[in-house]
Image 1 (spheres, helix red, strand yellow):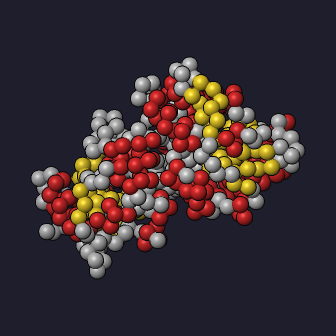
Image 2: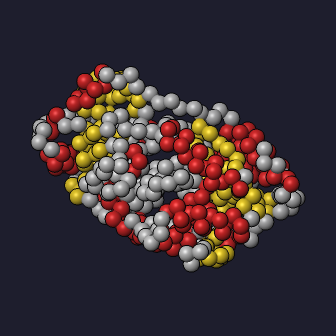
Length: 424
């Protein structure tokens, strides 16, 4: 079979970038005058999640440093729902892989899956909160604000989700995702957040917004009473800044790697256009991708293959790299069991392409509209088939940086990654 020739293309994004991250964290928290609430010797829990947030270890350390400036004691709390296999050891290991260690931050890490039920919402839903965080005198909620992969609303992923799912641990994540089947996402998030803000001594939020190159674009400290209004505004900025595919209609999207450090669904459904349906674009999706081929998992995901079920094709090595136990716990907890399904898989990438390309439509395989990306966070440079050449010529935001060449395979007939640096 003749495969398409591929062009290397650079995308041009408007991408504000923070230069002094520790300084900005300190300046932002200083604006809240936390010394009026946080007293010397008191403990302050700081949430640390499992998403692959740029500079997250530096940000968490800077929050710890600010707490120490108040003569208080920072305590780091893994806040990641059911990730890490739903175990304290697994969640601590995720933080270690991100560089969030006691040695680096100078703060104790308290990892536990225990929660306390602090309230019940008007819908009768028990409100779970991490026991270690609840036993601290204050809590600082740290999280990245961005569009959610499954829900739509004034707030999606961010400080609210960290209070519910992250600090709610496995038990909270299970009950809230179940409740969303009967109530709207907004109803649940507003009701649970109200209880957490009233009962759990939240003293501040640290909201992070990233640019299209997976870099820290903005950090803002938010007072608890302003969480909802300000997070809604930051979500609009995050949506404008997020990376995107270079074309709206793609017949085959090849993705080098998926993982929980990339997106909650392994690959961001806001990017690939499967937010409302696992295997087809809807009228609400901006991007329309007919087939998805996932080539691998990130190291940081520890075998959590959540989102692999959104793809139609994969290879044997990826299918066998998926830790079924960890993946199924995460997907069932998130009430998205289909995300754990293993797609059709074949021995090598070349074998996959021979099956996938004819399924894309009536065009000849070498003429298909194919895009090859590292992952849905890193879209600055991508490989695209020659079918897009005319469209590229009309786009000032796209630049061809390497002319058309045959698809590059290694000795095992597997595609070479878009970026060798990201692959390792």
